[in-house]
Length: 472
Image 1 (cartoon, rainbow, N blue to C red):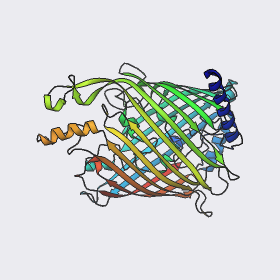
Image 2 (image 1 turned 135 degrees about the horizontal axis):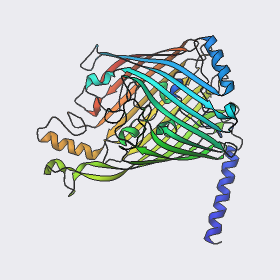
Image 3 (image 1 turned 90 degrees about the vertical axis):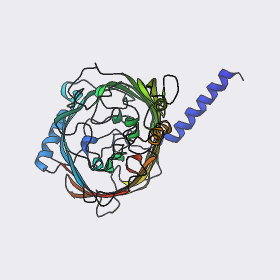
Image 4 (image 1 turned 180 degrees about the vertical axis):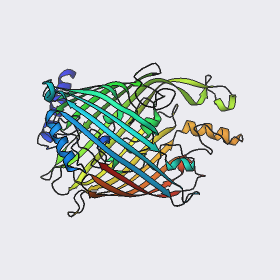
């Protein structure tokens, strides 16, 4: 048998195996939405599932909910909500320090098939008001760790435009194209389970991705871009995107309000590629999400160790050399182990994953995470959620070498905004979401942080938090 026939045979066998395994799978047909933060809705694809028209939100005010449902029937989706996150330190050198942050969000979705008959065209826009501060700043922690994920880009701004983009479904929804001003993380490397937690290290995406490359834009920052997703089989998808790289997102130098649509400060393009499996197993339809991704940022970045002659820049006193491009990899998965009740997404989940960044021109090398989330663990409290998550992020060894050179020479202001050579930061979080009333959740939270700012000379921190979410 010649080589071409052998390759063809293996291809047919692979398609047969995938069809046999996934053909009977009963995965979700609509992107699930976090019950606790609807304007954070991240697309977690099911079989042929693409970005949904509008989140199915439980509203506090029943008359308003009736109005929203009526508008939905005409192709207009509206979500208005409030989220606050407060945290207080119990130790770590500054016990009693506390911080508050909030977000008021407004989402508008337009289904143009219902409005004017344009089949498959949907538009999405989100605007937020954010204010407050993050407790991590009190401890000199400027890493990806943050006690309150709601505070970050776009903070302390009256109105911030998060995104405005359109999606077009094609070929009986096997293909979806998205175009507009949007973050990368609404489509890549996400999980609907991440924002169960308050710590910033994983909410939305593993944060070493966006901290490792400016091209991996994350909510609430956005750049012009596009994404194409294709479903060859039920429960199997592939997608790729092309986004502008703007290292000045959410800064006064560019446009902190998000309304600047210019590209004058773009430095390159970011190209993410991801493949995913979305199976469900057994009679209880135990749903899982498995994905592997790669990202390339074409921008130029400073090396974190070498000068132009490939010598240690801190030893020679010469500028760090310029390098072209960054690569990133991610592997992520979650699997429902046990179903709770009749809710489509309710059950006990195990999740875990890893990220690898380019160490030569970025601050981090690896991030690992693992956790457990139980949605509806008590039959008497079907909308409550419980979660435990652990995360560990390691410094780039090249950056660490530069920091030791500076530290050994007596400097206490080190590369990477450190005051001591960095190693890793590790977080452990335990949280419980109480469904207090229709459209209202109250979430007590506990976090333990090892090596804030990745520095071993910083004390461990225990903190208590409280998150409140209300949808109008």
